[in-house]
Image (cartoon, rainbow, N blue to C red; front, side, top):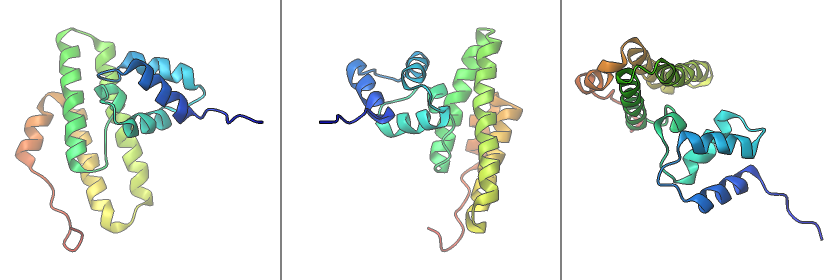
Length: 156
């Protein structure tokens, strides 16, 4: 009788159940990348996001599902960036910037493939990330002053 081969999702589930971390840390991320190799960062991030476990900001990355998630994750990365700056940790600051740059680049690629009704919101998300990249320290204040974009009429 053939046994079913464990999927990456199964292995991730076992890892998280065994450790039951209060927060999936960057150390957990590195261990999972090794355990699940070969695995893309994007797929691993998707699996972790769907796991229900809280994720460290650099593990979660920038969420673009909606403006609430975008604000929450960019603000969390802002805090990480500020802590790194206070500790004069240039490498960590670059990690935060790289996470936002990667998300912005991904959003720009997605912008080319989405319908016109969604393109305005996606462009607004890109603009938010550009503000973050221009000056991370002002992002949370800027977003509060900026306010939420209003959805186009007829879409909710």
